[in-house]
Amino acid sequence: MEKSVILFLILTALISSGCNNKNNNREKAEQEQENEAVVSAGMILSREEIQARSFQELFKSIEAKDIPGDVFTLVGSDFTVITAGTASHYNSMVASWGGMGILFSKPATWCFLRANRYTLEFMRKEQAYTMAYFDDEYKDDIMLFGTKSGRDSDKMKESKLSSVQTPSGNMAYKEAKLIIECKLTEVTTVSPDDFYLEEGRNFVMDAHKEANDYHKIVFGEITNVWVRK
Image (tube, rainbow, N blue to C red):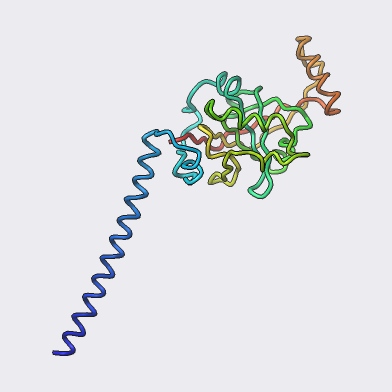
């Protein structure tokens, strides 16, 4: 009789423990589903809520052909934030000249950068970078990347944006609405003689005085595209 009571108590404890574990797992799964639902529903998240979420909770992968919006708005109005480097050392800059298309039968991007851009050094070293685009509410935040150089300032630490690594290991920002990951394909140096418009010729010649080098046209193969859920 005594042995039966002890056995009964042990079985009861095991069953209770198993139920608790199941309940905990179920609650955790429900919470994850709830978080996913909130993000997927397109609800406006505060900065704090964005910072608290993981990359996977905020973004989903799409094909390059399905990139939302038009390139003229993305590059010309929204501006491109180019970021390259590692989690321990990276830099971002703002670019407003560039585009997207097909190169070597693959989706690609191109941008027109001054030769002395600090971010360009990271792009060459890592041979990979991201191009991020933001809603208007973040304009002041991203313009910091265009008014200071990371070479001689702590602008990356001054930024209020939340840096994050993509699953591929490239650096970007949680607040972005669109992130394009690129593999460096080619860096070409322009020449004043290549320009048939005086405006373009004078522009690159004036920039040469500052950098002691001519502008670079940077081509990158699109490897991943992420949009906010």
